[in-house]
Image (cartoon, rainbow, N blue to C red):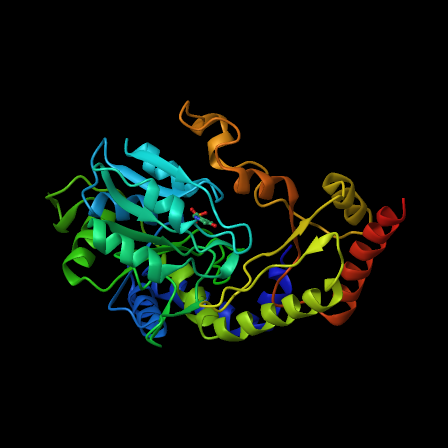
Length: 375
Ligand SMILES: *Cc1c(COP(=O)(O)O)cnc(C)c1O
């Protein structure tokens, strides 16, 4: 699905030197690379504070801890997402409240979101799924009206830009109360291990986030809050500093792949290509098709026989996962998400794809589908 090796080879001399430099200086934890990376990411995003941490799931958990969310508080998120979003809500004994998504752009359904608000609702977690922003203008309006926090899960959308109706433009993760991201290797800005970060424009909140991520201490060995140990190590920060300089070029490369796929599949009645949001640019963390009247498992097996990986993100919505099953959410509660889980299939998309690979993938998909349409 991704080709991290070719991507590494394109920047190998820079990356190798940066890693050796960290080892030479032995500032493995909280060294200058981490501080410099945070500052450079702040500048790139146009946000006042970036606080690095150990992974994207930790970022979400730390965000909820920093906002003082307490057992019984309800947090609303989409049922069609990666599990991490709901996992931390449940781990902190908060109540995850799930809602359906839009069939075209896969982001949280605004009407459903508003209907899910109760007096116990404290926060909304929009997920910028697959690389484009959820409808942030509407979400921020609802949050303001009901006095709710907004925690953006931007693990899949770093660098995506959202345009408000007044023409102002913001980067994913910088619009809500806190933005949370992941630097997992296959993410658009991926390190060579685990990593994550929180963003916020609120300086007081940033202080609290820094403290919670560091055992709840401001002054060493004085613990004012119950915290966690969640750090980005210096080697990962050094790698991320280099890759951040290429992030926009990576997004351009991904968009080229998406455009190639779009053109190849245009007009095919069995394939629906990803719909671009009117308000957000797309950084194509995933290129996700919906197929209809096609046996998706058979398509996937056929592609595998041609050495083409394809993934199902995601095969089950959260409300149908055993760990999150809840009598409130019977099967059928969220028909859009349930239908998406049956019909989506993601094709390889990354920064190092060439025309020959794209030709092989699109012609294989089309030859399978066109054969099926004949019978
Ligand atoms: C990857 C991901 C996360 C979690 O990130 P980790 O670094 O793997 O913990 C959270 N939310 C979404 C939507 C993701 O894609």
